[in-house]
View 1 (cartoon, rainbow, N blue to C red):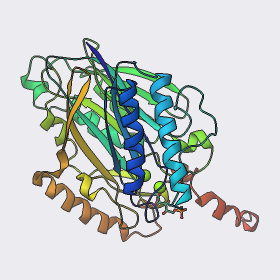
View 2: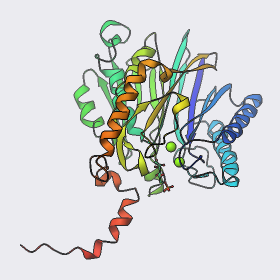
View 3: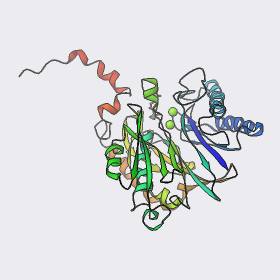
View 4: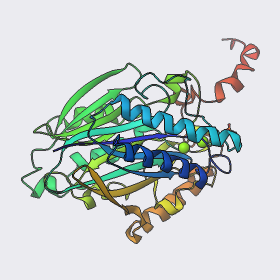
Length: 365
Ligand code: F6R
Ligand code: MG
Ligand code: MG
């Protein structure tokens, strides 16, 4: 049977400042999801947050880009934003960039990761949620999970995934995409996805065409034309029996890679794997975080979740992330802690520099 998993997220208000979604806002979202479940719009749901981002994890039979599901998410965010505004929570309604819903939340502010799958006899999935970073945060871990035999033992020793995977890479500046097969085109893949501010892995497929993973790639700044907060991405990956194992998927996050985001969306910092309990970025509004919830899909229903980065085997990754945070912070307003000029284009920095424009004069030779 076919099941669709949709993860739709938005930052619609938080406490204090940009730290976390208030409990009463989560309750509004749960109520809205429960009503939709009773009406039969969705089969099951899990409402959660990673820092100041509210995530709606839904299972249903309506396929990808369904107006009913996107409409439900939009209406839910609107309800949450209404209370957030009334309570003067911070950034109330921030990610709802337009007034009227037009059938699909893509391009309207929220981030979306969804796939329709043919349910296997047993279907484990992992939902990843980030805060204080951008969609490119999944490039390195997805590469490791689906193309690096030093991360994923199955690429070498399991005939079911030995053929490798196919990557769909989006050029977020030009609005184009390319498909690359690995291991054959591994170096071509890396030549693009290493430039992670521009080329972002959107989906990964098994070589027989079955979808293995999907990430949200919405860039708020490219939609709004100015800085409107970070794009804090979400992703879904299928695990086991013909896909990388749960542990192989999680292994890729044991290295706290440097990602763009953190304070004012303008600084590089380590991506720290955390449990939901500590998904509340505070130091310098960070450091950036990633959360992982594991589910089993059973006849369209989500069973779980299990909070996967809660395990103590990720303590060392967290410790490293804290050490790297300390090291990066010592650079203050200097690169490479501060992002490059192109990456800062849509932040608040250009406004500051504009004031100095008329004071520049030619350097005499
Ligand atoms: C980063 C983030 C925060 C804010 C910062 C300033 O994604 O959301 O670091 O950029 O707290 O916020 P404002 O401009 O709202 O005072
Ligand atoms: Mg916020
Ligand atoms: Mg956020």
